[in-house]
Image 1: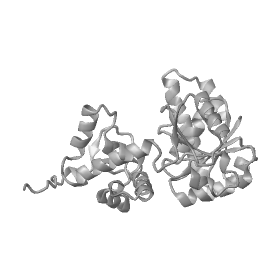
Image 2 (image 1 turned 180 degrees about the vertical axis):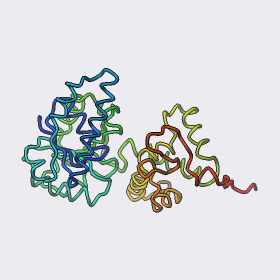
Image 3 (image 1 turned 90 degrees about the vertical axis):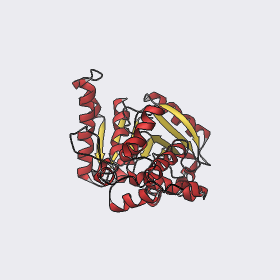
Image 4 (image 1 turned 180 degrees about the horizontal axis):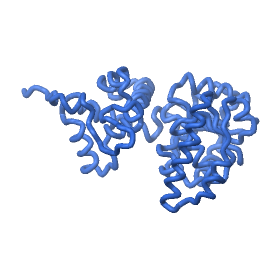
Length: 305
């Protein structure tokens, strides 16, 4: 396996491309937006500059790694020689199904088709292709160059050979694979998202405010980041999409997304990427500032019975 194509040049896509290119693979990044592709290359370069500053990479290494990456706005040109395609588009089922219908027709027969989805059924994605045995999930964690985990999800018809190939590939690029069966949320988000949702419910019901909730989880449970800050980092729209997958997949009221989460996404307060979620984000600032919505209003404490 030498040629890796990544569909999508956003945060996850450029991170995945960075890791494969750094490990000597030929990487093609495909995106319909030429400016997004330019931004992706700049981001990869800046991330490598941090590695250079830490002494883990040289300027010569950087140029060689960047030389391993090509960009395409044409899907057919970007995947025609791929041994593995990793789809890293937005967490939207119709978009992903459309991509897989196309890449299944455009790639060589031996090519493995992987999705970086964090919750959508691999079996469902595979069902729109004529080779479901070669479709698999590779759920990378953000930021991809730093996080060691890759959640590997086999669909109902994914072959054992393909699963074993992806497990070994993850190890070759310095990642640690964890194997999950194909059920809503897989392992990571089956556990993580209900916790984040419960933290939002706790805020909504006035049990604690933003700082208290995050402080309890950081200092009491040894989490490196509180659940509300983490939700901002992931993107509240992504959190809502995953909660909807869990709710629809299991039909259990305990997975219903918090009304506060729904309202924040509807209002466009998506977290760090929109500049405001539970916290406010100013470019270049590392100070953690609670959003005005939550810093000025008193806690809505339940009435004492």
